Length: 99
Image (cartoon, rainbow, N blue to C red; front, side):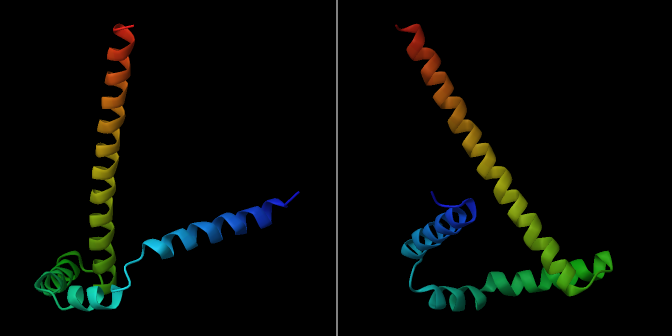
């Protein structure tokens, strides 16, 4: 029997290998394009503005902005997931009524 530690390593390796298959090989081009976008220039200005407004470093401001955007993204992911779950529950409930 495989030890727990070894199993965890195998599972983690499998997860990473699965992600490798889904990675777009043009990530360098995509990163370059994103870093040179107008949006990044505006975000750079927002970092400076937030740092000055909150009296924090640019690093702290950048982290705060990224964390806020990630939180918004997660909230919407959770919302969409819950909507899907609620739709499935409704469908199952309606299906049970018809039987």
